[in-house]
Length: 92
Image: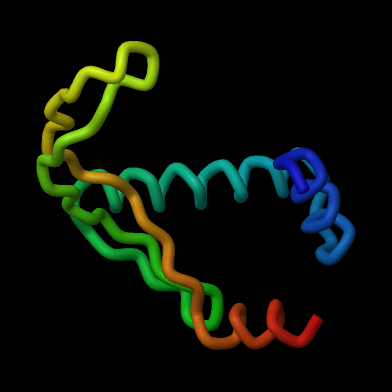
């Protein structure tokens, strides 16, 4: 499902227009990204949590040349599915 399909689904399940659904989805996604970028954890009960995670510096290889290289430490976004989400997926 892409964003357009999600907008259609939200508009279908609510009494709002596709334009309004798009604005709300965009605002939600932007708010989550901003909070995680600031180092905060965002929890949506039943759905899951978004949080920043630290990755340590590590050694890797250049796939083209095979030379070893140092991959610097970085912060990456992470998602952990909530209990209800996991249960819904595992019932298939």
